[in-house]
Image (cartoon, rainbow over all chains, first blue to last red; front, side, top):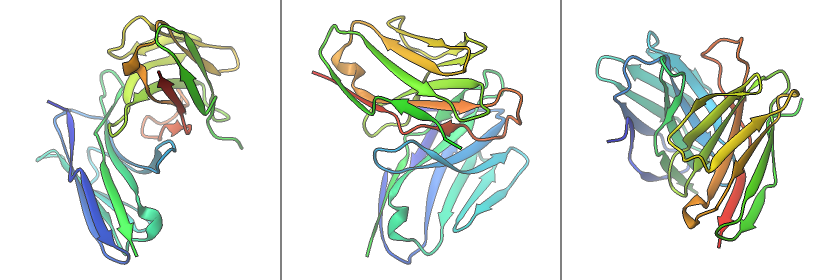
Length: 112
Length: 115
């Protein structure tokens, strides 16, 4: 079983709409939880980083939330743009090994 | 200020061959991590180099080896290539003495195809 699971696997929305991506993890404890955006053929780019004590972190139209009790995180995208089409990857940092554990990502497509 | 740069961008090899991928970290960074990303999957940690030594290793066979140079750049070597080694290989850099909550910076990867 993956230690970081994301849903949905893929999502299609219309430009201007909002959407929420989910991440469930079993890594506990953890140092931080990160959301990355990965455009096709490019490396991942960091959107947000939250420690276990933080509940929410925003970066422009991207807002990440964290519930350490239920081991869930979400990434909310407001007023989507065509350039938001990408894979969004949830990553949890293991404090003992300092390794990053990646989810398989959600593939978001925004259509005009 | 250049970010993480990787070379080559694309590479085609045949089974049994050997390959070397290269990575230059972001300026000011001293730690390099390598990841393998299969199509449609998240990156899988291969290993991490700091102070020219392998500090951590993921669940990859000995066919995967690496090196870090005094200027902090790094190489990933894969021997006896298998079809399953076809993937995007990502390099990420960070600063060991920095806040652990700082993001790793990724390069755009090397797309390796095995025929």
